[in-house]
Amino acid sequence: MGGSRRIPVEEIRHIAELAHIELTKEEEIVFTEQFNRILEYFSMIDEADTENVPLTYHVLDLVNVYREDEVHESMKRDEPLRNASKKEGRFFKSPRIV
Amino acid sequence: MKGMEGDVKIGLEVHVQMTSLKTKLFCGCSSDYRGKEPNTLVCPVCLGLPGSLPVLNKKAVEYAVMAALALNCEISDRMLFFRKNYFYPDLPKNFQITQYDRAGGVPLARNGYLYLDFEGRRRKIRISRIHLEEDPGRLVHLGSIDRSPYTLVDYNRSGVALLEIVTKPDIRSPREARIFLQKLRSILEHLGIFDGGLEGAMRCDANISIAGGTRVEVKNISSFKEVERALSFEITRQRGLLEKGIMVKRETRHWDEARRVTVSLRTKETEQDYRYFPELDLVPVELKEEFIEKVKAEMPELPDKRVERFISQYGLPRYDASVLVSSKALADFFEEAVRLYNKPKEISNWMMSDLLRYLYENNLELHESKITPAKLVEMIKLIDEGVISGKIAKRILPKIIVTGKSPSEIVREEGMVKISDLEFLENLITRIFAENPKAVNDALINEKAAHYLVGQLMKATEGKADPVLSSQLIMKRLEKLRRERGIK
Image 1 (cartoon, rainbow over the protein chains, first blue to last red):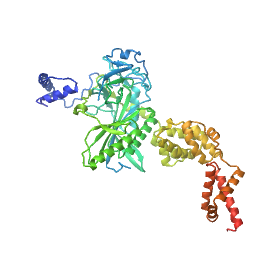
Image 2: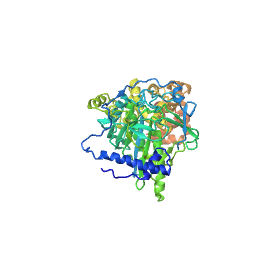
Image 3: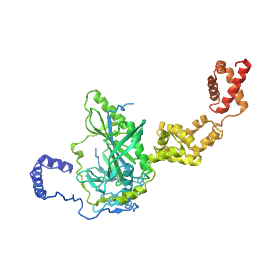
Image 4: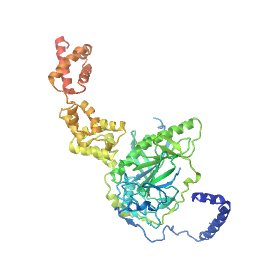
């Protein structure tokens, strides 16, 4: 309870890294400020009494939407790679990972 | 054996493809991706194109429930899917659809176990959870993984249905880990949801620690043959460090199958931060009592039951029955052979001894060999009909396994027919007696010493002499000598 916890600039850097975004020193400060304002706003929700309210996982009132295990045609041969900016033969090409 | 000292704790995280499914987990693309041209079994869903919507494969849920029941798990009455976020091109969405057991998430099943009969003891291995998730695509590197200038990606495998089965750290040795995976494989094969003979259909990661050390995760173990090697290496490595008083670092290591070593993966602290959140493109799944009962009713015979049946129906010893049922292919082979020739004991003996030993020594699986139940039966019939001796059969069996030729063909080609020509054998015995006067004298006094002479006869005929007849002829000759020499 209570929205008093402020997130420090280190956490903003961590989130930026997870999102693969590079931030300048100035942007880090701006984002820290903005993140904390957003969280403060959300902290209003904490004031609601949710003691006996089940967790909302999905807003639709649907369960068990299935398909049968039947093969459907995949994309036409050249379609998958058509919009790929980088490819080699039949492969998508991506930067080296490790 | 090293690593059996009882201070080792191993937990496995096993990924199993439900290979009997025709389609992927969330789209209708064929899951039969092996040997297919790259990126031909893909659609907007498994390519993660914007606006596409995953829909759950019903059969996958049925199979998963079946597996959970077979592993004695509690099945959740309601389960959810989550997004596991990470930057890695093997999944084109930048997240994997999986299940999560925190933040309100519920996996398919929890708290199961299975029993292993291992080194004469019954061991209980607990299962913490089972969940459904999608397989990532296949990455291809030119040259070694750390030298390749870029990565090539094939999404044919992306979205194939996986079961993730996680054990508690109840496993005590690399050998036991292998037995566990074998049993798991046998159970899943008996359920008809999995073919372990397909490459990459069962993969696992292992958590391993030694008392006084730290938990280390080993990734990229590609089969149950590899698990024993990878874990043995890792135990030796950790023991070596501890003996030198060096701390074992808590880390993730990669099993390098080619070099047979584990190597440290350079990890950033942030790597484990997957920011799980609910997959809102999928609705919750309710697993109702009647659905679970229906699946239960359709479950085929499981390995433990089959072992009992093999004991009662065929009169096999428990050990033999459990070895045969350790693999569905082996058990099916046995029953097919018995159907062709009702001699379960003989068939089991040949399978347990020579067949399995050959497969084990050559690191082969039954389906990789060319022997069939019909060929094994034909060989046993040749023995029973007196055409070949058991000794010759032992030499023929590996040839059947390797070439797939019929036993009678091999016998004919190699002139292996058992020698029961009386005159030929009598002449040979005369010669052997002449060459071994001391052995003959021994045998005259002590009947047991006659075995040596029988052995010489077998040696002289390269095992082709009829063993029963040869032994009778030698005994007769000895008896005759005793009479001549007046020995009682």
